[in-house]
Image (cartoon, rainbow, N blue to C red; front, side, top):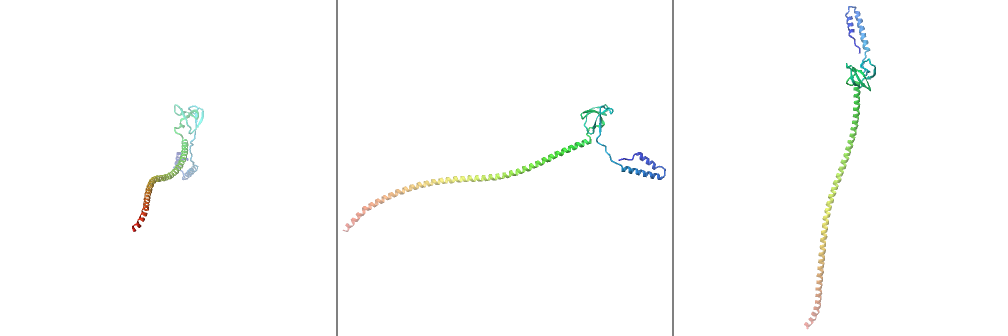
Length: 242
């Protein structure tokens, strides 16, 4: 944006203080206002370009021939300095030459910094995307692990129930086996008792047989005796009557 210089202001002040006719002062005011309005109407904002070309010479003055041009942001390797430090002998892009030291800086230019920042932002963005993808994958794997854990827990519960049933069945089997053993022992005792009773019954039957034989013999003898005695008794009765 353009501005009014100090010389212009001095001229206006001199004319305003002059003893001329007031009409002249009115005309001056009108011209000044028109000039100001015209200047304001054509005002514009400009910026200095960041990129400039730097001449690389074959020697430490502008009188030496130009080897090549360098642009803003190029990296330079300093080989030596001139006596007055105004010129630098540098190596850049495979060529050696001299440039003015005033065009160099120990820090990168804003454009290079911005480019570097953008690259870092892009790299961080890529890393962020990668981390986001890894996080999504990790969450999916975690969900899968939780599902598997739930399934394993369910299977474990089923196995515990089956184990409890097996233990109960085994306990019942042990009880049944013990009961069977007791029953078998009782059966064996009963068999022994039965055999004993059978032996006793045989003995008793044998004794009864012997008793029967004896009584039979006695009965036979009694019958014989009676047979012998009865006729005698019959023969004696008539004789007594006689």
